[in-house]
Amino acid sequence: MKKLKEYSKEELETLNYDDIAYLILEEKKKKMKISDLFNKVCEVLELDEGAYADYIADFFELLTTDKRFIQLNDGYWDLKTKHSEKIVIEDDDEEYEEIIEDNDEEEVEEETDDDYYDEDNDDDDSDDDLKDLVVIDDEDEEN
Image (cartoon, rainbow, N blue to C red; front, side, top):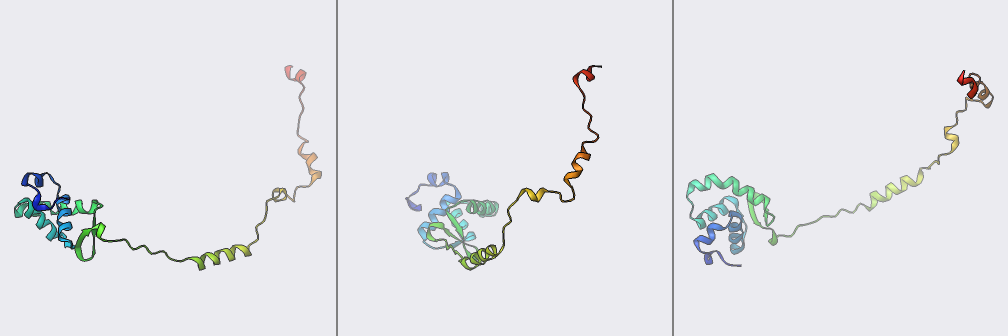
């Protein structure tokens, strides 16, 4: 990759602020505060102080959405490739064993047809359910 001083003014003007910031951080090889980093970008592009005030918010948004950069503590920014992510995996084996033990103690009941049986209803009453039933012949229906 080319160094900043190897770019012509025209080439630099075609680069985005975040691309220039990337080159700056890569060359400096150290983290920088966002204000210092954007000052350096403005210096490289030969922008006036008014441009700094007008575009610092846009520059911050660019850095936060560009996955090449990482925000560090105290407002410092650096290239993500220079920092490894620390992943902490907690060991939950004890909690898992407790859950298994709790489940072993519980008895699981299987559903049976008896679960839906109404004990108050006797078989003798089943004839009474049919007492109001009327059977109609097809011949009677036509009349």
